[in-house]
Length: 114
Image (cartoon, rainbow, N blue to C red):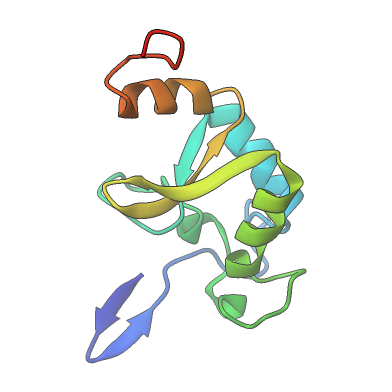
């Protein structure tokens, strides 16, 4: 997401691109495969939800097509964590990777050691 000439611009794939992520279930599958994923474009090219979805439906309110709505559906499903994990920027972490992120944030101390 960028601001150009005072206007919000979303980066992403064409609607008809076969590589485009088309559902929140598909997005969870990809997050499970790679472990974690920022919501918006960042310093790592191609490493965000924004860059793998079509910009057309962001903030449309259409739960079937809107990646902004997907974040709620995904978090409610319990299949991925959503939060500000990446330098105070939003993203997702798979269930398998979440304990590692939690330990890192706690400076490697687990709850029992505390």
